[in-house]
Image (cartoon, rainbow, N blue to C red):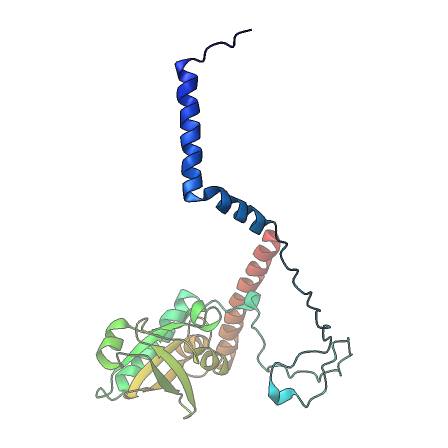
Length: 260
């Protein structure tokens, strides 16, 4: 049989293949590819295995200062019983037994305080401060008249001394921004047994020192109703005042029980 004649496309393709082979031989690419293939077949050397060091189970020393000390013991070791702590002599006041002053008692206390203030030296500024529950049994915060503070007291926080009629001194913390006495006022109120309705006269005898005159609300009522010192009438008035306090305490107790 006669072989079929090649088409022009096959002839062109064959010529290109032969030309490419010649070029590869000229660039020596065939040999280079063989060398690369042989190079990749070389086995990589195995890294030697490094043995791990044994773990030290002894406690580490973070500081050289305690290196000479024995290791700590974390076992439960019973502690020696501690001594009983001393209790503060102050006991919280019974809020159900608060003393609530009547309007009459407040007025008499303020009138008596006005008399005391009028007898003081006007060269030393003074003011009257009636006591409320928040001053003596609640938050123990005493707000002072703002105009008095801005005129006579320091513009920054300062320790102010309160001197009573017996000359005993008490230190309190004056807060200039809030114009009042905070730390130390509670102790002064408890030590002098201040109650609702009492009136205090504050006289500024030094830039940071007050002379304090205390007017008792119930004593003011007794003295006003008994100027001649009649003991029987004084006892009756004192009993009436006590009865008012007892009724107020009983009323608060009943309200507290109802809420509970």
